[in-house]
Amino acid sequence: MEDLNYQVDQLRVANERLSRDEKMLRLICDTSNSAFLYYSYADRRFQTVASWDHFFAFTVTEERDLDKLYACVEEQCVIPLREVLFIEKQKLRHQSIQVKLKDSHFRVEVEVRVVYDAAEQPTDKIVRFKDVTKASIQNDELTYLAYYDALTGLYNRNYFVRLVGEFIRRASEEPEPASVAVMFLNIDDFRRVNDGMGIIVGDELVQVFGQFLSGMMDDHVVVSHFSSDIYCIGIYDPRGARSVETFCEVIKERLKQPFVLSGGQKISITLSIGVAEYPEAAGSTLELINCAEIVMFKAKNMGKNEVLYYSGAILDEFIKNVSIENKLKDAVFHQNFIMYYQPQFHASDKKLRGVEALIRWKDDNGKMVNPSVFIPIAEKSGTIVPIGMWVIEESMRTYAGWRDRYDYPLILSLNVSAIQYKQQDFIEKLTELMQKYDISPAELELEITESVLIEDFAKITAKLKILRDIGIRISLDDFGTGYSSLSYLKGLPIDTLKIDKSFIDTVITDENTRIITESIIYMAKRLGYETIAEGVETEEQYRYLNEINCDHIQGYLLGKPMCAEKVAELLAGMTV
Ligand code: C2E
Ligand code: CA
Ligand code: CA
Image (cartoon, rainbow, N blue to C red):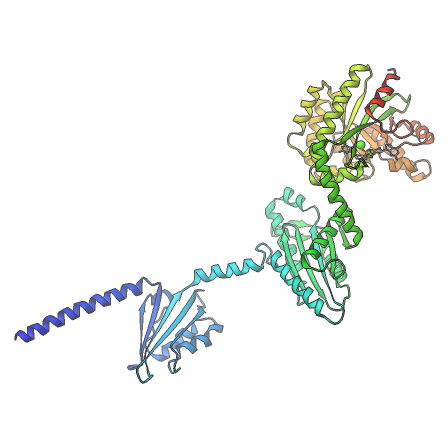
């Protein structure tokens, strides 16, 4: 009896231990984020364990239930899954695959283990289904971002460089001459879309245009979105035929129609395109892309909407400009600038009306650099801001000196670049200097060129209005070289029109120029503007301009740009 009691006790202890183990196992399974399928070879039965419901809406108890499993994975996963689950498959010990579930879009790692007895017969099989959706999507995204641009779905810059590098390698191994072209594309005036319509619209335009470009891709053509409004196309051309031209034609044809965005906006664009080809322009991918970019900038400078091919001359000019840009920065620091002043006269009596301040720059080697060369570079690099402030202060200081010595009503005309007008504190700084040198608004005239005005019309005209309300004269420089449209003049707060030298050059010899010049002066008068003729070099030009009622004359005939001392001499001889 005692023996029996002992055995019962033993059994109870064993049972308790068993249920404790079972509980522990269940807990481990439940928290493992997995489902398990257990198969016993002895009784040919399946058993599902743990989070089975997380994945499947059915259970598996016998072999034919496996078909339900195969039916719910994506097609390409069925065969691999059959291979690991197929019961008769011998000698499989451990394997792991990934499958996608059809409806839930779960990604599942399926891990299989088979246990064998001493006679190498399978006894148990355990299959674990683990949810790896999150990690796998993150992995996919990372892979995607490594190759593609998120906004357009085109190749990103890094991958593009690799692909073009591959093209170059292929071309270099080709027995026949082969070329690789890189087209560097930039949407003209993209900022106007972004600023005027908002960045969401800007982004959509970038996407829509990118979609159009992606249609050009094939085995020999790769398209990439570099950033904002910049795209690059790489073309492998085994025959050395210029297929770039064909692409340009296709693009040109498409751009004849506007792009329609989801909000219904229709946007027409033009492009500046730079093309550089291996092996002519460069031997490596990065150099090739660089060359194409430089050529694109040149195309942009030539007035946009242009396709330009690489040439050595473009590169030389670029290098020269970079060197000027660097020297300019130095010049700002050392202030190697001098101001010259060109007199302007009343046409009727040749009395002095005022002077236009014109900057001169002596570079390190003592060479005079023409402002037409360095001002555009300074505008691009932003150095025009400190240079322009120096011009204003230096001219005002000199002007105040003349005024203190000579009692002559003189107008000081200053060339001010659009970049300067755009500076937030421009008006504030200008008026501060006017106070410092005691210059009244009526003594000042600010010149602005027609072409730069067009770029940011609303913002700049708003500032011009403020300046004009203060009483400062505004003069429209180089009139006739930009829009050449009189209709937009009425929206401009200006006092003076400067008729460009190109008109004056041919006003005597060309009948059409005469008609235009006379019309400009007539219209300007009706609109209440003063007129100044620039670049008057001959007596004949002067007489004619005076006859057609041009108010003022500026040019080599009556006075070249001169240093401050020479202006003082001129003032000394003038009477009011
Ligand atoms: P601009 O404002 O149209 O200045 C007139 C230019 O024509 C000056 O050239 C002047 O020397 C030249 N010129 C005047 N009369 C005659 C003439 O009878 N015959 C000929 N052949 N040329 C004449 P410059 O001084 O070389 O200036 C060139 C341009 O550089 C200026 O054109 C202006 O756009 C820019 N610039 C000059 N100084 C400044 C400045 O201080 N600030 C800014 N932002 N731009 C400036
Ligand atoms: Ca000027
Ligand atoms: Ca001018």
